[in-house]
Image (cartoon, rainbow, N blue to C red):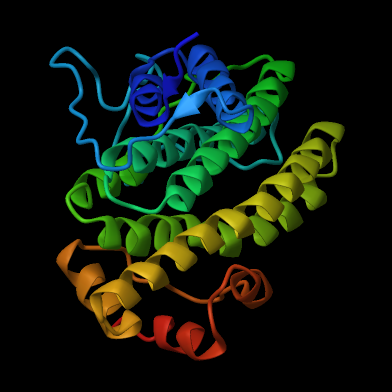
Length: 274
């Protein structure tokens, strides 16, 4: 049986529109890698098929600007469903972001592709946990409007792996480390079984996301070292060039330190110029 091309199959999974099929394809590729049934050509330059949708996504949810995404109090059943849907959408995008890192950037060490494939696998687990919980409340992924900000940054950084590592995992995804504990605190106040189940799922996501941000930090540091670049000043330049959102406190310092940010870096990132 011929070996599966790891990066080409990651590109195929990225282009899959159906969320369930994308999740299954991501898990299958991870398992094939674990079992030695893949081949990895790190030098190969891949090109999506002209008909491919990048990324593959279902017709629903409708994507709108972030300010137009409706919000309701999680103290109501519809509001709780909307909150869960928003997090589910983030995790769907996170699968695509990780798969994109696997196929898009040639010439990286083997560990880079292995790391991002594992991240895609774990993001798919998160998506499934949230979607299943959303379905238990009588809703599904796609029922509410969402925004595409995460993927927009993916597009902006598609030509520069250093910018991608700087601005997606260690900026946008790291914001989740800060946002999750306050979200959990609010859900605990809601206190319903559905809200408390959401808290449990967010515990899993927060644990794994620390590792995902650490992957971004590790490869950003490696890339800067390879190029002889000072990481903090280069990060500031990349953030300006690609219009990254300014990081705002309060930060989850414990989670960020566990994810590889240094105390001095946290202080630097908290400055308005970051």
